[in-house]
Structures are given as C-alpha cells and as structure tokens.
Image (cartoon, rainbow, N blue to C red; front, side, top):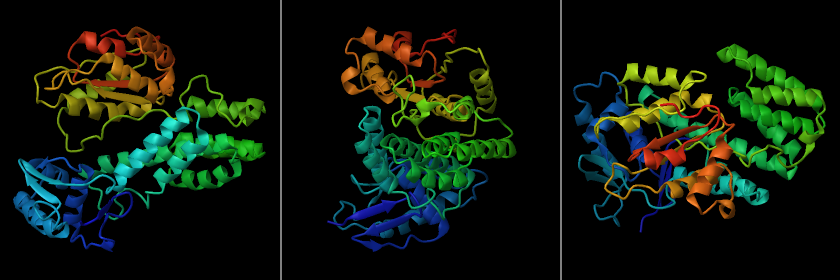
Length: 411
C-alpha cells in the first residue's frame, strides 16, 4: 500500500513511499494547498475558485481548476486507492483523501493538544516532551514558497499563530522545569521573528530574571515597548507592564519555577475555527459587530440570527477573529448542533470541555451540570474571554455556557 506524507508546515511537499513528488506550477501548488488545508472535506468548484482568485477571477478560472485537478490526480496517484488516486471527485467539487498521521498539520494538532492538556494538569516534563514534538513538525512559515494571496493569507496566518501558541507553551513548560538559560536563547530568536507577540517578550523577561539578569529583563521591556510603539502605535499590555514593575521591585515570587497565577490556565485557549478569507460580504454588519464587541461596558452577549444557509456561522467566526486580540485570556468555541440533524449538544458536555480548556484537570470537572456552570462562571468572572456558541437551539441551551462577571449579559 502506498504511503504518503503531506507537509504544509513549511514548504509544501509530498512524499510517496519516501520519494519527493513534483507538484507542478504555482497555481496548481496553491490548489493542492487549499485542498490539504481542508483535507477529507469536499470543496465546491465555486469555493476553490474564490480561494484561488479572490478578486476578478479569469473567465477560464473553473476550467483551469479542472485542468489542475486532472494533473493532481497523477501527482496523487495511489494504485491501492479505489479510484487510483487520492484526489477524489465528489459533488459539488473535489477533496484530497488523507489517512491518519499522513498530514503534518494533523500530527501537530494532536501533539499540541496533548501537550497543552498535560501542562494544564501540571505534568510539566511530559508536556514539554509533547510540545517539543509538536513544534518539530514545523520547517518554516506555513506553506512557505506559496504566494499568500488575500484569499489564503488568513488561513495561513492562523496556522502560524498556532505555532506561536505552541512556542509560548513550550517556553512556559521549560521555565517550570528550571531551564531558564535555554529559554532565553530560544526566545531571543522568537521575538526577532514575531515581535508583536507580547507573551514572548513576557516569557523572555521572566527567563532573564530567573537567570540572574534583572538588568537584561528590564532592557527587554524597553525593546518591547519601542517595537510596539513603532509598529502599531500602542503601549505594552497590562500583563507586561505589571511584570516590568515586579522586576523593578525585585519580586521574589517571580523566581519560583512554577507559575503563581491565580487561575489554572497556563496557555489561553484559542479554539476559533479557521477564518474563511473568501467571505467578503456583510461589511456593514461586521463593522457593527466589531464596534459592539470592542466597546468598553458594552453588551456581554451578541446574538446573530436568521434563516439557515445564509452564512451566520461564517460571519460569527470572521467577527470573532477580527476582535480576538481584545480577549487575551482566550477564545472558546462550541458547535451546539441546534440546527443539525444530530441531537443538540448537552450544555453539561460542553461545559466539561470548556473547563478542561481553561485548565481544570479532568478529575476536578464537576459531574453536576449546575455545579459545572458555577465553576465556569467563577473561572471566567475576572477574565477577558470570548465565547462563540454556534448553532444554538434556544436560550436554555446557551445560558449555562455564558461567562459571568461585571459585564453581565444584557442582550
């Protein structure tokens, strides 16, 4: 049986039985990338066209896609597959069939998820091992070498952000192991490449301080402040500023190898689905949503409603991505299946998943739904957290899943 390796966490590459496969011209490689980003999912011809030529597609666009697919069938030839190839034609379009463990993105997701869970449970050594294994799948920026047209940039930027989350999680685990000098060297490289990720600067300052270099940590803060002001015209976030003050005051609690935060979260959850960059409508509604969600003291709940099939879920996910930076304590997402043929999701089951994502160990997740809802409200009361509940059947299903606190629901 043919063995494939599909690699998109770095230059796009396919290996079949250990041999590298030629992928063809740039647009064909872009089509392959789009199909791999949606592995085992059917993409319609219209959707593929939108992703490849977001604006002003040529009249021959769909014919070109069909030609590329004919060529990719040969690229993905698999004599052991029912159709002789991994590129499958299925109404209303095409899909690439990927088996378990063949796509590096899937392996990264599995290792990162396991590492984050172990980290939340306090198993620092095991977490560091899994997080390191997750990052080993990266060979450079996502899909390096493929032109990042507007249609693809959102999808690939999201993957690069997930790598950044894993880097931060691994650095936090190694700090908890006491490997401070090692973390300093790694984070110095990362802040050069990703200077707008404030958590990287924060971790670097902690690593320097624990290595006995308080002056270096204070200098790092000044560099971070200058970069943020020059690049995007803002001051450092409250967390970074507080850390600077603690180092100035020689706060000995920062020397502890284990985190001293009040909550169990070590890595803020980032659960939003991939944004769909082909979604270009509803500009006025998106502007209104952003304004509403970013207004201090604004409503804690925003409801998107309308008939099925008009793009409510896509709209909500796009809006959530656009305001996610305003919610540094994380973003939670759940599909409640209220509009699906399957039974609606039970609030208790969703609460359990949310609590685990927020760092509550499995054995400490309450089995009683009311107790779980109370625990969730307690954990989220003082946090700036964004929760997206997709396909809610009714208010009763959604209400136990709403955070509480000063910004109580008002709409």
